[in-house]
Amino acid sequence: MNQIWLFKTEPDSFSLQDLQRASGQTTGWDGVRNFQARNRLRDEIQQGDRVLIYHSSCAQPAIVGEAEVVSAPYPDPSQFDHQHAGHDPRSQPDEPRWYQVDVRFLNAFANPLTLSAIKQHPEFADMELVIRPRLSIQKISDRQYQQILQLCTPQPAPA
DNA sequence: GCCAACGTTGGC
DNA sequence: GCCAACGTTGGC
Image: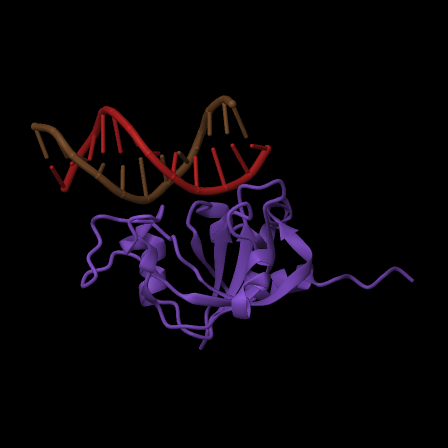
């Protein structure tokens, strides 16, 4: 059974549109440097899982679209790259500290679901986005996912 | 740009 | 293993 996740990204660094334009509409989701998020990437995420993409630290924080996990977890290569901001001197190739997966673009929502809208909906009160906003890899329940999809789909035009 | 919340580090 | 200091995140 595939799980649904929410990945946060700062659109100034890497946006959903960047993913859409990427080669094969796919990118390695590198740069996660938080242990709980790492544990989920390494131990729980599976190929085929669904990913909601969330834009943070921007004018309109919102869930903006969807992607799909298209690889198994593997060590984040940037941790070994001395030129890279994600370099971690404590990582050894035989004992990597940080992991990533590859994600492929699926779609951009016609109506992005803004954080302020999420906070206005009582049924989202237990979302990790609300109660643990700093965690960068979040779990989404099936029920939450269905509600999010409904809110992100264009509403029929008034008659 | 501010600042509150929170994760990580390191001395003891 | 505690906890103070420090760094980072991210909404506003």
